Image (cartoon, rainbow, N blue to C red; front, side):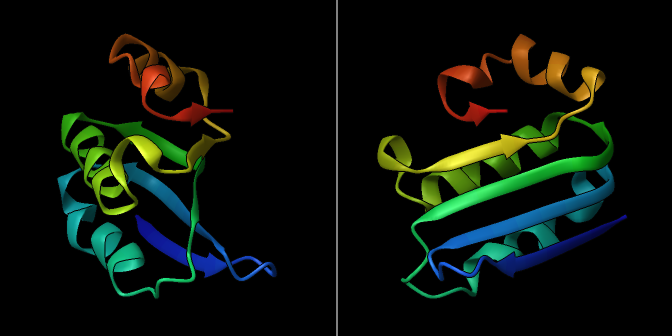
Length: 101
């Protein structure tokens, strides 16, 4: 399990990659990935290509990111989900809140 974050070359997009299980054990690392950035970040990408598991606390963490990024005006995309993770996001109606690719 690890959380990695990097800024894209445009300087305005922060990519947060979750490797392994996305659950309560990643809570602090996930928050640290976006809270200590600067105001130049206007877009967020959550890369779940290597995420094997997602639980309700992870859904809550995504909602906290959304609040941090501006709520309804937030620009957040969740990308590269496997079918199990995609199903959980779909059941939770997260397509209404996030761009899921």
